[in-house]
Length: 123
Image 1 (cartoon, one colour):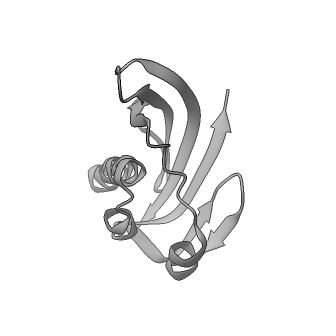
Image 2: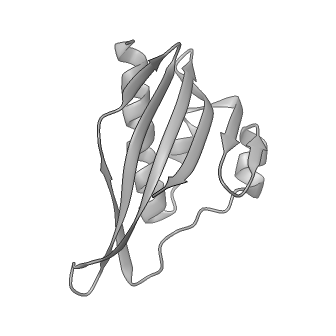
């Protein structure tokens, strides 16, 4: 496992979580290659420009806080990493869990940048 690639993967997940909480996407974009392939259940986007123009970030409704509960990244070799993430939605008013979504995120890293991102809904 490349320690540098593992660090990029961890930074990416932290930036992605923050983007989902705040709407601030620039830290995510900074970790992506210009020719990134962004694969999500709804569609696949090619390149950073298309991602910026066409991706709709499903921010949680106002009444919820969102946090990622994750397990460690698994190194699949050749710059590929995968992690299971549970998106936990909590009521802002009480802090109690309202619901969750289980996701699987796989990234490919080349030269310190994410060149491929794939999100799958699981469970």
